[in-house]
Length: 313
Length: 197
Image (cartoon, rainbow over the protein chains, first blue to last red):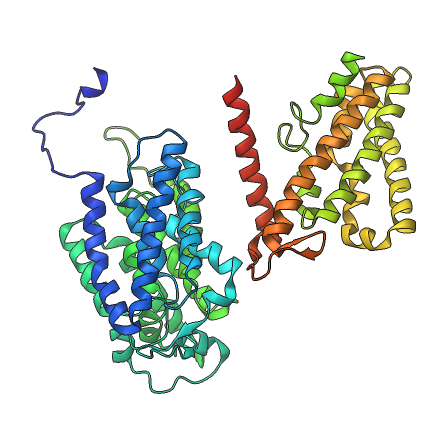
């Protein structure tokens, strides 16, 4: 009985929201990027996405049956994990990469902690980092877009890291996704469409994505290759997984801070780590590591940004 | 006899040093990269445990309370030095693979823990079986962890490839992989333990 008492003054507003509704909306917002990827890379991208989703759902269902918990595979959260993991893979990975990755994401990234809402780290990124550390050969072999005979090519960020000069890649190409990269990260236009949809529905706030992107831009502009204030900040925004990470993975409800103030700190932290890894780190791209590191810092951010109780010091 | 057998057996399952007492994780994390390292480390630690438990139990009534820890350390260090010299003489390759972790058995918390918690309070025979049980338990835990890491992380058993075309899980060969395997096994054994009660 006690949990049915509502401890606040009237009027109360009942909103028709639930976990699964939010999750399915996020899935819809991810569809444009997936369609763009299939258009850019061909059907192999579609297979990676399907394998990721099916394997994530299977893992979640089997583990929930084994641990005698309520089976919640239809609430959409496992589907999102599967999609996001697939979006973080190169389009022509061997078929077992998304299967093992999705298994690891759900089993180790989520169910070990107790399921949805209990996980410390973003499950999809846990899976990606595990794959990256285990099979770096497959995870860094990218194919050129729109080539069905699998011509391998490095991502623009990897080329910059090696110190070679980028040829004939314009900002428009980067914006539309005509470059080598992971499935879901290449088409910025489609990602922004999905993100706009989520922002307009109010499911994500602008705080994390905007501070994240702005910090990366500022950092890469200030510490440019030819001395201070000479960096190509637009290139750094449009390449790599920054847009995908900032809008769809850093904003994960479970693993990001609750208050707006905390979210701003979270976004700036993600931006600084990403920029440091990109500019001076060993990897060409640092979005997944940055988000995971800030996930780990989320509890402490939440503790120090707790809102003041009205009427108390 | 039954009591002694219990003292031996408890180190293997009920009070397994790695999975239940969670002691000696430092060498476990560091050397469990391959089965042969695990076996070597397990045997070395078992020998030291056995020796130190017996000697400490023998002198338990003449060591003053206040300086017992230095005394224990001297005894343990003696056995570790014997082990290290024997290993250098008979198996230099293993000694190179284990490296600093052989001398570090001196500060292994299993050895000192058993001396402090058991050998200084119990008779020689009991301590002997306790040391043996703990050593075997530690060795078995190391075998389990290093077996998983070698098979999955390198696709080999004792240095021989097993499955053709198997893509090793590279991360399990790294220190983070050791933490992952130990964490999962700890959780697994906790689930088993809680289910029985």
